[in-house]
Image 1 (cartoon, rainbow over the protein chains, first blue to last red):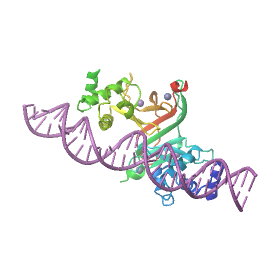
Image 2: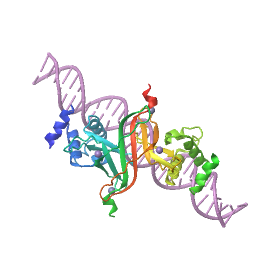
Image 3: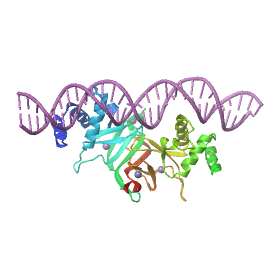
Image 4: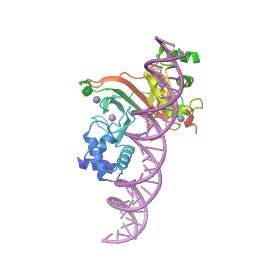
Length: 140
Length: 140
DNA sequence: TTATAAATGCAACTATGTTGCGCAACTTAG
DNA sequence: CTAAGTTGCGCAACATAGTTGCATTTATAA
Ligand SMILES: [Mn+2]
Ligand SMILES: [Mn+2]
Ligand SMILES: [Zn+2]
Ligand SMILES: [Zn+2]
């Protein structure tokens, strides 16, 4: 797995550092987007400086290894791209945000609708965040 | 117009204060969501304390007189509901955010897609923000 | 008019994220 | 292998959005 991770960094033309590997590794084992806070509070990552974490996340996202989504709490979450049999997923799907536990999840099976841009405008990206209460939190 | 505004506050069961009237008035003359910053920098509003503005916006939004949308800059924007011949609009539409001028606009003609909730979860609301460059900014 | 409840102002605080800079680590040319 | 150049990291300081507590003022209704 770690070899795989290094491969990703390599392909992206990034230097392989322990911090990047660890974060990529962590996000790969999760199947939901994690916030900076959620990431840095992991044992394996807490030793890094918070600024370093911010920069690593920004870097990984810029080269396309992560996608990021803004929760309705104003906090960014980061997630590795997932692959289906068909094609690479660039994070181009709906996300769900539970306002009880503040956890975000991907809804990869539902993709974003086609959108007619405002007259003369150029669309770069879209984010559809569904806000609600997750199954877990509903059972309490 | 100001009579109309007072009516709205009244119907919502809110006290009529100069601050609330002025802010509602301002947002009614705009047809795009304004941030706290954009609002407080208006001459007519700059005399109020920033905390008061935050609280007024929160209050108006809670009773349903405003809808709020989070921009990809992490800043909330507030907008009055607009009415069409057909029906009341609860802000249930797509929003466009220009990353050049940081201005948000409503796309009321395009409504949000139906979304299949995650198993066992309850959906409360949705926000679809389209990120791009507006017509104005493209011409420079 | 007066009593009550709600709104406002002010100060302090929290939280996320950014910037600048010196030092360390890695890469590459010789 | 070594030195120079480039990139990443740690630390401190900063920027900005939004919140909380509490004293004071204002709106409303008795
Ligand atoms: Mn996702
Ligand atoms: Mn709108
Ligand atoms: Zn939850
Ligand atoms: Zn623009």
